[in-house]
Length: 287
Image (cartoon, rainbow, N blue to C red):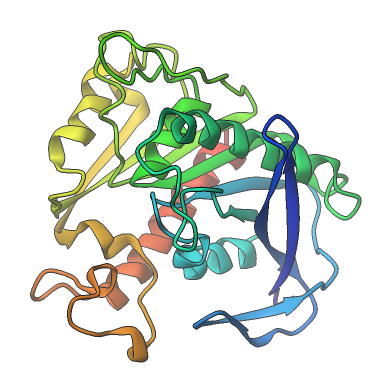
C-alpha cells in the first residue's frame, strides 16, 4: 500500500536552560498528503495524520549553524515515506531567526544535549513511543550539525587550549551521516576514539567553509577506518546538501542557494536521498 508523509510540530523542553525549541516530525502515514506551506517552503505532507507502521528507526537531522531545520525537508520527507520517523529540531540560539549563541561554548555544549532531548521526547510521546525503536537512532548532520552528530556518538570536542567541551554520549545512536561536517573541535588524537558507529561521510569538492581537511580529521581519528564510507561530491559546494530552493529565493548574493558552475542540485538530491536511505537501511535495519 502506498505510504504518504505525515507531519507534526512539537516543542521540546530544555529544563537546564529553561527554554523550549521547535521540532518538526515527519513519518509514514496512510492519509493522502498535499502541499503545505512552512514559511517560504512547500512540503507535501498530511499534518497530524496517524503514524503508520511499527518498529520505525528514528532519524534526527541537525542543521548547520545559523541555518534552518526546513533546509533538509526533501530528505526528511523521502525517509519518512520509506518508513523512518524523522525529527528536525531548530537549534535554539543558532538558527536563521536567532543566532545569538553563534561562536560560543554554550552553543556547542547545547547542541548535542538537544539532540538527546529530541530522542527522549520522541520515545516518550504518546503517538510515537510504541511505534519507534527507542534504542536505534541515526543522526544526519550538515556542517555544524556534523560536529553535533559526532559529539552525541562519543566524540570529545575541544574548544582550544585544552578546554574540553562538556558533552555526554548517547548509546542509542547507531549510525551517522555527516555532510560537509565542521570538525575543527576534534583535533586531539583521542577526540574520536570512542565513536564506534558506522559513518557515511560526504565532503564537497569546492567547500571553503568546511574544506576537505575537516573530513580528513574523521578519517584519521576514527579508530576503525572500515566503519567510514567516504565520498567526495564532485563540483559540489558547502550548501549543495541543502534542499533546492524555490525559484523566488534563487537570487544573486544568497549563498545557500548557489552552487559551483555546472552543478545540478536537483539531480544530486535524487542521488543523495537514495544513497542515505541505502546506508540507513544497512546500518539500522540490516545489522
